[in-house]
Image 1 (spheres, helix red, strand yellow):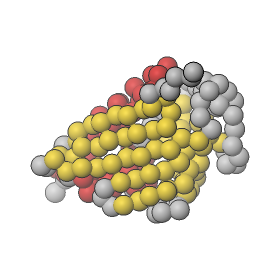
Image 2 (image 1 turned 90 degrees about the vertical axis):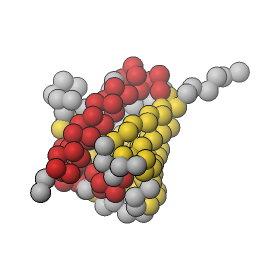
Image 3 (image 1 turned 45 degrees about the horizontal axis):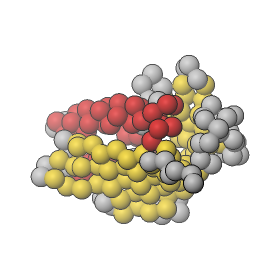
Length: 164
């Protein structure tokens, strides 16, 4: 009998109202400042944040090269929930295998990401769930990257809130 691997779940508390945190996930101008691992950058070839909208992005990593991803927004409920798919692709948007993209052989062809936003006083509790094994995300560095990106996002939000 095959054991089921524990999927990735991360919870983070942000020092900002959920409307601002949600906007940081849906505004390309803000995403480029935090939505990439340390030392990397992200570009969006296209992004249309609405239900059934799509995105095509690339994480530029100076060590491991480019990682292209396409996805579809399955649910966009301001300011409570985002659900989107993520598929590894090439620059043209054609799906590629996990090994070709530098991921483990059993990396899922498509990952579903669910992000929920809950107000807790003046803070926001963000819960992220991805349909990929947590063990695999820790081995590839994806888990650690989420934590660092959330720290960067928290700093960005604080800077936005202190601007006059």
